[in-house]
Length: 257
Image (cartoon, rainbow, N blue to C red):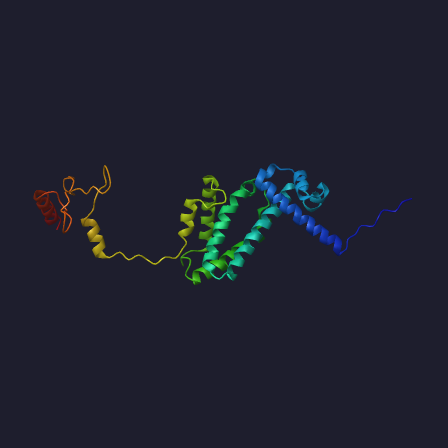
């Protein structure tokens, strides 16, 4: 009678198990990004260089594997956000991080779609990773605001909402690894900029010199009759096409007064 070989459960075995799990997660993240959630666990095992039984021991179902992939990605983003605090310029590191999130997220479209679908996905199991990410994002946002790089009226909820919109823009723009121009404009709106002061004189000057642009650039027209204004050559630009229109405008102002 033969005796079965004893099962090794020591530190070496546990280290091998952790290594195999990491290989499976890396392979799964790439496979889901390339082929969507229809990829089989057998294909993931082949890519990871492990047996199918190894995959099933760690992740009995594809749902378990999908959740683990998303938890890993969210935790990676949280670690990346935290690393911004060690950068020489936290503000620019924050914006670099935002760009990375927007550019990389469309690659996980299939996984994200499954998570947001109403099909019984165990969302409560993702809360821990989500909370860790939001804490890290909040910390770096506060520091970037303290350094004057980000507008002070921005909250974490605002940044998350902008991420959602920018990721949608990035996905449909086909920009690949480059940030879509529209997404760049949205992210730049987070930047703190010096307020622009508009004086009363500037407003009055704008109103007095209002022009309409028709049939070419800068065709100034009379506000009374709409006729084109002839250049005066020197001095203050003409506001009316004739003395009659000037008098008519004067009478209108008197009636309004």
